[in-house]
Length: 284
Image (cartoon, rainbow, N blue to C red; front, side):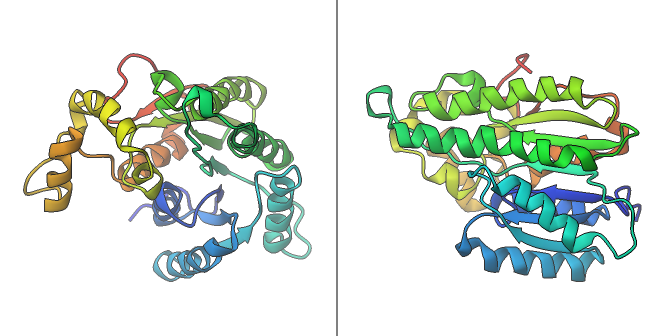
């Protein structure tokens, strides 16, 4: 089987679970060596197990590294630790070929209930974290336009969903930075974002019943969210009856990320690419 990302090094933040986990799996299957970033101590065991599994199944180098991307020192620490773990003695070049800004938080509240501390946490993790990580990674990006940076945004940047003043704002900021970085880093890497809608993850499950009722109409009109008896599990089909359709599977979102990391995606940059099954049409 062809491994188009052989000998490339990728960094995936928030890699211990959910979409990040699925992204790590598909990049590893394509031959990419990986740095698996995680934040909390509770994520250490799953990140280490993922690294072991990917190494065993795909013969790649997979290194879990803990770093709090919500701090000013965390992003640079992740890059410097990766460099120290990978750079062989006597080697002259440490190169980051792929960077996936996946780690994020969603702290939802209606306007009267928004807390300053939640605003600050959200913008530190979802906006400042990716900014400082790309800043720290820039000296180690390729110089031949072969690099790939993919930022995980959300339909929330455009949807105006109730309770997502802060979360939607962080994702809109990330999309704006994506466009700027596409210009500033053009000789090193393409820079794109994807905008998933509901995805079958614990983060989506934590949404309130009120929020899920509001987005039901959107889901009902999303082409690829229609549940498929006999293909989707019975549980997914049953839940879709109430929700209006099914969320994306993490593998489906990861597939779009992998597409943007391929050599064939070299003529696409500064874009927000649909990864929401058609929940938003014509807004990318």
